[in-house]
Image 1 (cartoon, rainbow, N blue to C red):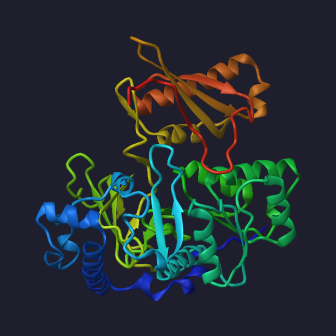
Image 2 (cartoon, rainbow, N blue to C red; image 1 turned 90 degrees about the vertical axis):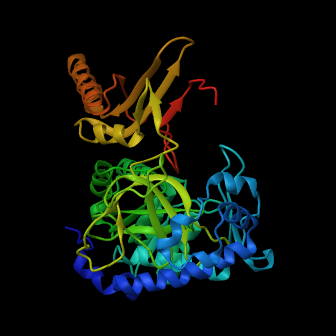
Image 3 (spheres, rainbow, N blue to C red; image 1 turned 135 degrees about the vertical axis):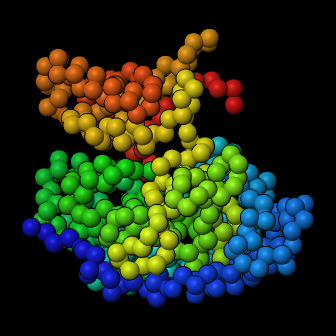
Length: 445
């Protein structure tokens, strides 16, 4: 039986910054905030204009308790400042540039100084160490390299702790698995969707994951549920850890799970978090759900002050058994801007995933197809992949499974959704983020 990493074995890898006493951390945050606020005001026109309009100056900000006095920054500010207007350093000091895909508007462009790359490597190094990874490990990095920050972020972290990086990037799945076997990969970095694909394809190739040295995976860039974690861990015979980040803040490494698997530790010495009510824009009570807002405390290429991430989560109270004192956030449960409104009901894809994960016989692949004819209500059909056993079973059993899923969805969402069971692998696979929603409605947006 393979030995998987446990909490005790990774305790020695905790850095001093992760176990800082809270009062010392707050002093550090206040000091760093004052410096970054001054820099942002002096070098970025967007901040200077917004703060002048709000009647607030850098001298009014003495510590993080004063942050609510400052206006928020959103993706729209990036678009208005496209491409380099949010940069705080001259291009001669920018050593790396990344950008979003720009599918919903102008891309969000982010720039890094050499010091920023060092910070990125530091926080991603902590992320990997939290899963027990050391310089003795071989890290297969199946996040895409390119303008997307996943690939290079994981790469910098592995390099920082001295692990050997195998930069396979995304795609060419059979080749990835061959590398995993031949090179003796011990840690895997990829989206959770792609981890499922690797497990599926590996089984078809006859790979015995129990016999491989692979023991831990770091998965992020899309929401995923506990049931999906269980599927990945069972399929690849590993411990699967959640990681969080967004390119505007720095990329992956903003927050990460330890082997306690009980929330993601936020690298608070570099990124100060707030959680707000997205409607009132006020702080929510400790532990309540709301929208995550970040202020970067140390970045020099592109400082962010009160950036609205649109990600919904909550702080987890109490101390973690791992020994880190950094505040924890729960898995992101959805986004304020990908929330679907179907027949007046708010629906998050993660809710559907949660239902399917609890129904035996379903596979972790689904697609929600939404249509609306003029003058009619929304028509919703959920396509759910099921196992070969279910497909080849009698019609009555398939109908019973469809009815079970429908009732569970009705119970959770208060919404009736037509369920259609489909054969294994009939829903298109992705080498990056899975396409869960096909919204064919003309919403007039």
